[in-house]
Image (cartoon, rainbow, N blue to C red; front, side, top):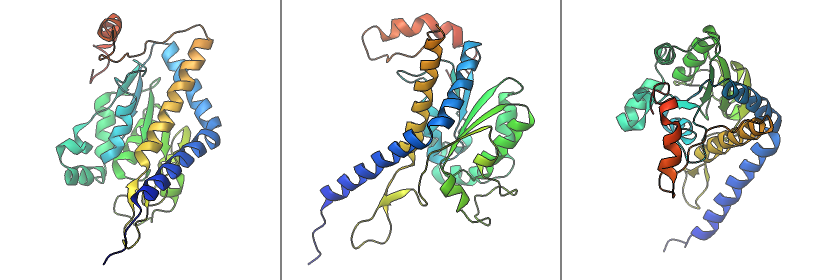
Length: 257
């Protein structure tokens, strides 16, 4: 008879590991996040958009996490390109994120240039679409903030099929790098008697790193006497009315609003 597995213990261990990783991000990435928040605050103080792009499968969730989100900054404009969204097919998404040249097309289509700020998010930090997006944005004079796991990128083989032909890692290309510290393989829970680990951690890590950035940005703006427009949940009392005051200001500027 198979041995009983303590699923409660596995879930508690998962919780402990997720919260420990978040604490590492909070403490170890404080300085990088502060510097990034200063640049984002400058952008918003000048009434300029902050672009966010997460090319690759679940990394798209990161750009959506801070876009059109209750408590989120209205100046955030997520790049929701259909190519790597899972809604278009997961295998298709993976193939496209590995296609050299694709990320360059996305950035060109957004017409980003000098004076723009782009947050690139991908926990693994190596795929071709991500690196092409970074290289093209740099060529155009865009200020880049990157969120990826340095451990994961540095330990991914140069011959990995997802890699860009240049073999670059995201954190080597951006102006400010925030390390989301996702371990190799992403999944972290080992079930007794099973070979593969389960319980991915990257969505938690990316979301926490980005929300830290948003919180620090808002704090800096308020210190300057600027109260930035922030989305309120449409499901909360007065939410629609509060948001309606600003929608006309952003509707023509934010592509996926």
